[in-house]
Image 1 (tube, helix red, strand yellow):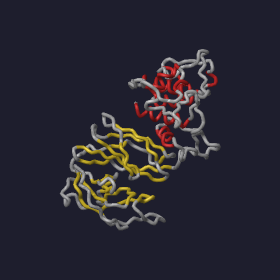
Image 2 (cartoon, rainbow, N blue to C red):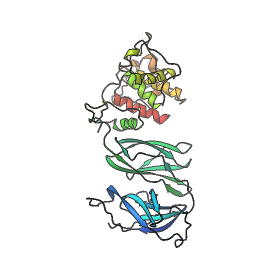
Image 3 (cartoon, rainbow, N blue to C red):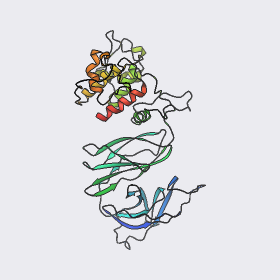
Image 4 (cartoon, rainbow, N blue to C red):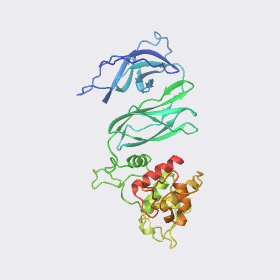
Length: 375
């Protein structure tokens, strides 16, 4: 494989470039190599000179880097050193320039928390650390995405993976220096739900799945894919469960008993108790919860507004609503709609809110993702 040399990016801070590779040969079983990305990663084995000849101490870490054309920088690969053979080996999935570098000074480069080598879905939630106060970018399959970073430098982001191999890394910029995390590789086994491809809420649903807020419904057989039912109406029990998972709440120090307890699945009960404890949801005057009844958009607005209060997110009610059916919003839900309609619940193209309409599972997914963005 001939690699056309690229204009070399600056050597990362804290490293010394020991040599750049433009020509290499890959050997993979029954594989014809073409293009710039290998579907089947290969091992790059780099023979290096004796440490003394390179002017390095024997404890100097050696790592293989690849040059990312789009980002214009060197990205480190997890490398293994075999001193007896004087080789450094790394798994690579690109056809680009490579370099062997020695770490001369420890650097606080971005870190991606451990990820699995393989996932059974197209959704993956990753987290990590960059230097607080820096700007950061995620490169997923060579496409850049801006990261939202907390004041402590931590980040969490849901990824939508393509079927097969995926690669990603994080870049931060500080004081004119650009540093990249190690490249991570994850193989996705395919679509997590069979019925959401092309749906307007697909990305929202995948983000809920990545955060383990929803797992959908099982297929007709053990081997069949799961399904989500985006256009199905959502029930009181389902939405409460989703909301509590989004808020990372489960159980209560003061368990409650409903008159229709027998109809509530055990796995759902701990989320209903959590919802009651933080006052996000209430039962009915007769002591029932009615988990299998569908929930209206007005009722969801109330639950979301209460969740914001519990999370100490200050969201004053809008001074006025512009929906064409504002007068149809019940008095008990009006203030909640004034709060939730600012960022979380949108109206319909005809300008209506439809306060008594039953919410769908797709609409609920979108609302919950927008809520999470405020927390």
